[in-house]
Image (cartoon, rainbow, N blue to C red; front, side, top):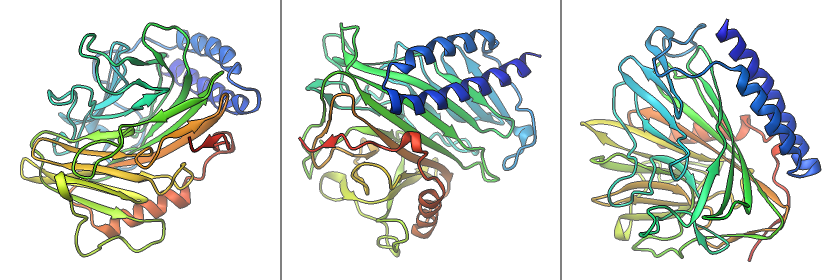
Length: 380
């Protein structure tokens, strides 16, 4: 009975969420006050999450359903394949940001690293702005141990299916620490694909940002060729000890893969910077290859995106560096959308595999009308 109630509640919330996104474009952010009230009502109907693994029901299309199990707590949702975790979404409000960790393969390789000592604000697979109106939302203030800019979020709605796929929907807000009012809100949806026969799976991110009553300036530390800078947005901090790291780049949909005979090389300072429609970052973990492909949607601002990758002795990192070349200005009450796809895979991908995956993404996931970016993006 509870499963049936949860399913009906999830379907009702999905309808409310889609309607709210459409109405927000037409009538502004005030519509979300009504949405949040309905959202709380729907959540009250759903049964409380359990910390015990639960078997997905239904028929799996890729990985065997008998090998998959959900794990839910009050602040996380994860999918296991046998004894190994494929992904776990963490949304404890005490954290800097929501994030995915661990992210791994069916064979048990963990691809991510959360809060390493060298950069404790790196959260495996996560989204964070660097500066908003001059306030730092990325690094920690040494006195407080938290960023001066705070990313806050409401409890997400989590919908799981029998084939191992899931959807996360949540509202986030951005504002300086110590202030209740926010400068910016984000409506985030993450669709997690069912694992295929090899255990590979996708994460589709849709992030709609809406400015409030004042102009918003997104900025970064200016990039340096042999060191850091330029980063902000969706990032991956790869696992400690990843060896023999390799980058593959696709320049644009339908184009020949870049350097199809050889991987893209890390340059001076063990860094790579360059534009492209997609990147794949892979390496050896416990002697076995695995990686994550990162695809930039063609409707995104500044597509094809600048990429910032690190392959140093202490860090394996990849970022869709939207702000690498210059800051971005958003007018008061303006909005825009960012869309990305991550594909977690075992083995090494070839340039041809990455190109095919990107073409499929670009051709098959046109942006819904309610999520199309408006025209309030300006150069500062």
